[in-house]
Length: 320
Image: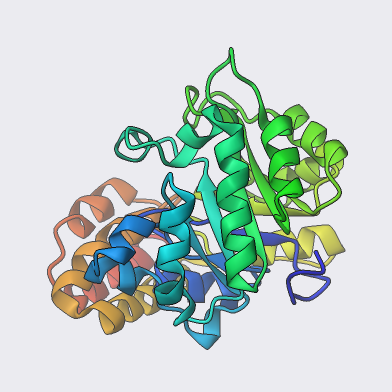
């Protein structure tokens, strides 16, 4: 992973998750030892149209580096035209989304729909590589459906076009997020290309990270849903793979992390918007705790940070 400047004892990156991996979450995960992170995917058309939300999504802070900006679209020209606005944020790398399974993305030919046209995948990579001057990575899936398993083909085309690394999610678009991830397809991609390969799918702790490394030979693992409500998962993975001790945070510590996370969301987005976005994160932090049903009901209706602080006190009382 020479294209990224992270420490040798960092073994997992934060996957880009739409509606979740915002600046606040990325910073928290980096504090707990994520190797790299990538912002929520941004539409290249939206950037060209001057969409305010698209520009906000691309904002990067020093606290989350090395960090990349993930772009989606279906036209090499659109990617090139959006580049000037993208580079204002000084990303360490650019990532092209060829894996998103969401209907609103694929119906316009973006995300995992690109895998139905491997030649177009290569043209998009080539366009960004030639004009950006920084590493360009790609996120793909196993394929579009079970009749079209072409991750190896697409990976080789992207490598030939100049991609610096490729992330493989071991499911087809048809499979969405179930059943279990196919580690064999990630191994096959790793064996087929010379560039670094990042394994993605079902990594939730040190044990599953180790399994991903051992069974695929990948150069790095990417954690997505496994980090929801558990940003310390990166510290756990790093400890597990280096033989260092790790202790799961106590309920009080989880409450402190949850509040710090929510406060940061509100700082960046304003409390009115931020507290509504903090609801889902707060609910995720209750996983495995006693009284989580009541806690979640209360968290789903919070309107202020003060309300969340009161619920955090209840969270600690019921788990001490």
